[in-house]
Length: 422
Image (cartoon, rainbow, N blue to C red):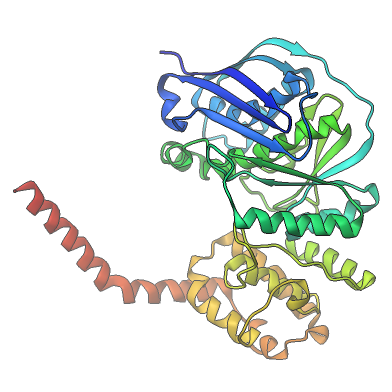
C-alpha cells in the first residue's frame, strides 16, 4: 500500500483555519488519530487564498514525507513556496547525509501570488535572548512581532504559559509602538513525535522536533498573516552561530530558502554567538536606560532561575558586567552559591555544545573582570574546568549509583523470570 498524506478538507472561519487529512500506508503510526491540524490568528484570514493557507499544512508534514519516502497530495499551493521545496529538501539532505530523503508532492493547481510590500519586516518574537537580540538589530524596520503557541491538542485549551507569553509580548509591543501577531496551533502535538524518534532519531543523530520540524512549523504558521499584511521579510533569530556546526531544523541553509508569494525569510544573527547576543542586548539596555525582561524558560510561566538555560543566561549577563535581576532573573540565595550548587548537581549532563556556551560566558567574564559585580563568583568560576568537572561528576555518579542500578537490574530480571514461570 502506498504511503500518502491527502488533504481532504480545509475550513476557514474568520481567524482560524483547520486542515483535515487522511493518511494511508505504513506512516499512519506517526500521526494522531484525529488527523487534524489547525491555526488560529488574531486577525481575520478569510481573504487569504487557499494556496497560501495550505503552506503551513505542507511545511509541517513535508519533512516526514521526505524521511519516509512518502507522498503528500493537496489541491493547490503557492508557486513561490512550491518552487523552494526542492532547495529545502537539499538543505536537509546536506545536514543529514546518513539518511536518504525521498518522497514527493502532488499539487493539482500551482498558483502565482504576489503583492507590493506594505511592511518591511515581521519578526518571530518569543521574548527570549535570541529574539531580543534580533529585535535590537532590526528595530529601525519597525517589525511586526509574531508570537506563537503550538502546543494545544485538538482544540484551544487554557494555558497559563500562553497567557503570560501574550501579556509579555503585547506589553513589549505597546512600549515599542509595534503591532503584535498572535498565533495558536497544535503543530507541536498533532504528530506522534516519540514514535518518529523511535524509528529515526538514532539514524538522524537528532530528534524529529529539533532536527527537522520546529523551524518550518514556526515560520510557516506566520505566512498566512504575513501575506495578508504584505510583509517583505519574516525574520527568525539564529539558535547557533557560524563556525559551530549543528544539526538543527532552524539553520540559515534551510530558513533562508523559504519563499511565499512576494515574501521571504531571513535567519538573523548567525554571525553572533550567544555571548555576543547578550552583549547586544545589554549595550542596548544601558544606552536606553530601559532594561528588558527576558523570557527564557520553555513552556513555563516565569523564569525558574534553576534550569540550565536560565542559569547560563544569568552567567552571560554577569559576564557583560550587569545584574541578571534587571533582566527578570531573581534567586533567593547568594548567586555565586546558587551557580556552584547547580553545577555540582548538573554538570554531568552537559554535552559539548553546552560546555562551549558556558565557556563563552566564562571567557567574557575573564575579559571584563573589572566590571563584574559578583566578585565572589570570580574567585572560583574563572578557573572552573567544565570538561574536567563533568568527567569527575560522572565518575562519582556512577560509583554512587552502581549498587542501586545492579539491584534494580537483578530485581527486574528475577521478576521477569517469575512472571514467565507462573
